[in-house]
Length: 545
Image (tube, rainbow, N blue to C red):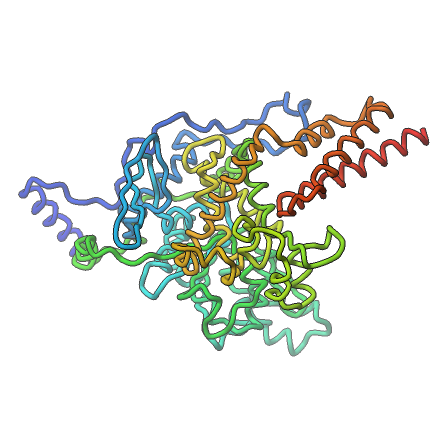
C-alpha cells in the first residue's frame, strides 16, 4: 500500500511539473509573518521583581522557534486556507478608511474591511483552544462543527485516532457510566466499604481537548455529571473522585435554542463560555470541495508539525494572554456597557434589591412588572431589552477572550474594537432578550429578533454612543471620587474626611432632583454609598483613636 502511495505521489509530481504548475502542499507553512508589526515581548522572571510586588511564577520565553502569538496566527491561516472552507470575514477590522456599500431592499450595509479581518468560525474555536474554555459550535448537520473540533485536538498533539475515540457522542441512552467510567465488578462484590471500590475511568477525562458531539441529546441526569466535569474539573462515581486537567472544551449542537432530544439544563448552558455559528457553504468554493474529494484529502491528517502546541507551549501562551493589558479607557466603556442590564426598578423597595435577579427569584410575571415601569424612555434604556443582567462569570470570560483576541492580533493592549468584536460571541447565550421591548418594534430592528450577534453588537454601539454623549471620559464625578479614595486613607484628616462625605452627599442630592434612574446610575449610586460608608467608618476610627 505504501509503495502504491509513493508511486502515486511520484506520478503526480511529474504531471504538475509537466504543466509548469506547483502542486498544492497542505503541509506547507509560509515563512512570511502573518501580521508584520512589533512583537509582544513576554515577561521573563527577574530577581528584582521580588522587591516590586507579589511573587509571580516565572514566565517561559518562547524557544528558538516562533513566538506563540505568531504560531497561533499561523495555525489560524493554515486552518482557514487548507482545512475549514469558511470564506467569511465577519470579524472586521479597519486600518484607516474602508469601502462600504448598501445592497438590496433591506438596505444591507456591506463592508470591505481595510484591515486584516477573520472568520469567526475558525478564529473563535482557536481562541478557545488558547485560553482553555468551553466553546459551543452551532449549525446544521455537515457544516464542519465536528471537523473543527477534531482539528483543535490535533493541534494539541493528539493523533486523529485518539481524538476520535475520545469524542463523546450525545445520544438518549447515554448513562453516567458511559460518560465517566464504571466501578470494577470484582470490587463491587468484595469491597467492605465504598473506599475500596476502584473505578475504571474513561481515558478521555485525561485529555486537554474534550469534545462532546450533540450535547443536547444527552439525558438530564448525565448532563448533571457533565456539568460537574466542565465546571469544576472533576468526576465523581461512588464517592471516588477523578481530577481532570484544564481543558479546551468543544460541544456541538444543531440548534441554539436549547432544544434537542433533551432540554439542556440552565446551569450547563451557563457554563458555556463562547458560542460560534457554522455558516452556510459558499458555492463559489465548490472547486475546493471537489479537489478534496478527488484527492481523498482529509485536512486533519496533514496538519503541519510547526503549528502543533506542546503542553509547555500551551501553558506559556495562556500566561502571555493574561498579561495583555486592558487600558482604563477601554475598561471604563466595558463597565458602562455591563452596568446597563441588571437594574430593574419595580423589583423591590430598597435600592440594593432593585434587580432583575430579585424578580426572577420571586417567580413573578416579568412582563407585568416591566409594564409598571412607566417613567423612563424604554428606547433609551438599554436594560429594557433584556430579562437578565450579566453574571461575574460572564464578565470574567469576556475579559479573557478580549485579551486573547488582542494577543492573537499581536497587540500588548486591548483596543476598543477587540471588545466590540468579541462581545456578541461571549454574551450570545448569556442575555435573554425581551422580544416585547419597544426597541424590537422600531423600523429596521425586527431583524435583531433572530440575529443575536448583530443585536448584542448594536447594544454595545448604543452604550458607547451614550457614554460619549455623557462625556464620561472627562466628566465622571464618581470616577474622580473613586480615584481620590484609591490613593488611600493614611494621613487623611477628620476635616478632609468630612469634606469628602459632603461631596458625596451633594452629588447624590443633585441626582435626586428628578433624574431618571438607569442601570449605570444605579451602579454609581451604590459605589457612592460604599465610599460614604468607608469614610464614615474611617471617621469613627479617628474619633476612637
